[in-house]
Image (cartoon, rainbow over all chains, first blue to last red; front, side, top):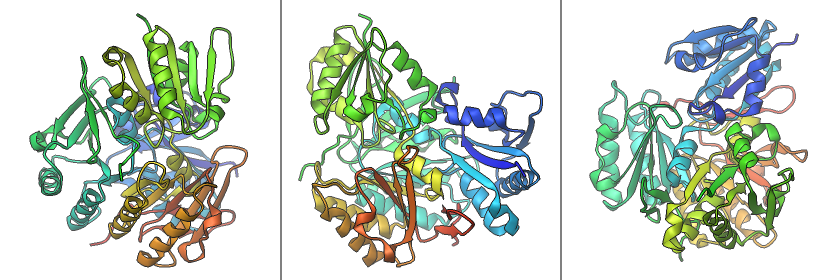
Length: 250
Length: 250
């Protein structure tokens, strides 16, 4: 049996941010599986079948990909950014663990990619240049109380923070609440980066102090990065640079 | 003036993990600046000057790179992994902020790369598939008390954790203490991944429960990933898979 499955990160949008490792896997694949807008980034060719599926059906998609690999197909599950950061890799392993024992013998690989927070941080400077955390603000799969607990502890630890899925039409109030929690713990000068659709034609960056941040600055295509207490802004002509120094004084 | 400076991530080691964006910058450069082993990964060619420097001289290296760009050279500062994660980007911005005003007008870009924790996570499965933090365990540039505070709060927040620079010959005791702190807060079954030199010929992965982890399992080329309380192990022939599910039950 020559089938395999690769869960591949296709980066935040720009083709030049896709690793050659992922490009090689895409060229060798017989089947591509993924959320509609990610599959549409893959060029069609003879011998390649594209399987688009909707959002919120990650487990079905993962089972479909695993079963095709078990049939001998060469399957790439495409994920935006890095597949291991709030993306498809965990869904595939959940399906693998619950699935037929034979699936565990499959040739299965995760191919890393440029995740949204690293692309956003690079565009703005180096806001994640010191200790940081990454939190998914969606409460679809975890209780909101846990998100709020993590926010408070992360602020107390003085981590820089990257927020994925800060806000969607179905969850308009969570990010508002996030800003309230941050304002209880952090000074109003704390820099916040709103980075939308980085490396795509719709890219838009905005840096504001926490005191001026409003919930409508984020949407589902935005990654939000909150600086630590040591994060600095370098003013210059054009966009400012935001970075977190390597040192914390004793 | 046609000079520019790019701080570029060359990934964890394997050539197929370098983005085309970085490759293009390397091809256009007149000067490459970086820590000796990273500069040695760049192929020499006519018209390209390689500037190797030792560890712990990051600010000197950054000033040198900025001053060459100000003279009109096309300078790439090479960084292992991603330049914005415990790497050269923050050092360059520190030098920029302290340096001549004219440097602020330079064409300066950060080019993201595959950072060690993402490469390590991909190799093992998806241990960073849910909320996580990244902590540099070196106390060269920050007090040890801050590291320990962050460890305790991160464990209380139930983040998965990635540790950079867990242990070096000059700091043999810090990682021992890290394991002690984790044992006070986490169950002995908590999975820990020791990922050494991922994507190089020296790559070695090991997954052990916290109760069996010892400090000598890490060295300066190791990234350590500690699972959250929900992280799971899938046993199979060959290496086990480690992943953190997307959901946390209420």
